[in-house]
Length: 373
Image 1: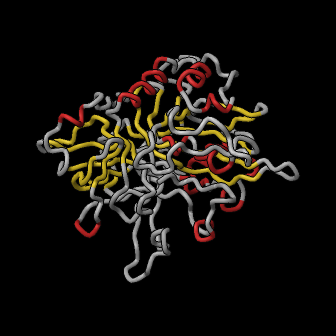
Image 2: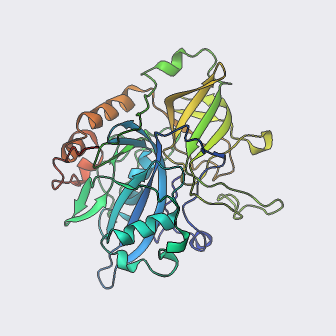
Image 3: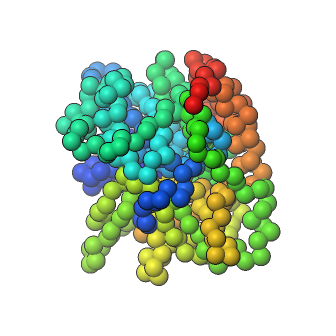
């Protein structure tokens, strides 16, 4: 469900010709009912040893939820994607977070250019800023802390649940998940913001074991909120085997509310909303990874985070896209550790994350400024 397939190994030919950050079906959150739901926009630049930098990704990557003034909860396969796909060297990577309802890839590229972010002079051609197409008012992009560097170059923009990745790199320099099945993996990561967010109330998580106390969890209606693809499949066009339909239409510019239907299955680590477009449900897609799941009980959508979207099960076709359950003790331990150290990113990395095993914890951001309003 993560949108950023920027590695040369993973970019499929049909994706290369399209906008690569895809996101959710559903209704735009025009009244900003979910202000704590945000998206992070990733700036990924390949640094070849024998040529100029190559910008391969500069748009929305994943979704998430503000759970403390500085901490955005998201998916581990989002924060760890680069290590698994590209390794831990040879690129420059940074991220920014927005909570605005509308924030386009063009807005982000204009922001990078205006801020003179390193290598932004290479934002040309299809990656160039179009000033005439900017959203008005312009969305606010908040910098995420750099959590890891190699040779002084930023390569990590988040922290990953310590049980998600194996502690040793493969021979090719890439990392690998402990369990590649996202229905079982502890698919939880965080992005730490440089400055605290004021004016948006962080959302609580389900307490450890809370979902086990619900007598009718299967059949309970569910809602997902994210910035994923508002997608359409043209009738009659067959999907490519294993990859879902090639006929996506839509964009990933808008925070959307997706009514995903009832919970159909409850596993130890995951929940499966129905997500059947044939039965009138919305479905999730690229760019919704890390987005929160909410439950509707007694006619009220409870704004308490129940799950974090993993996905990749059906490639935007709906059904069986799992959400990692946040009511697990290890999930709370990871988040509590990060939140307790949110003002000391290097310590949070060394104490709480999978990144520590790879020597990525950034010493240059040991104490972040608390900032003002």
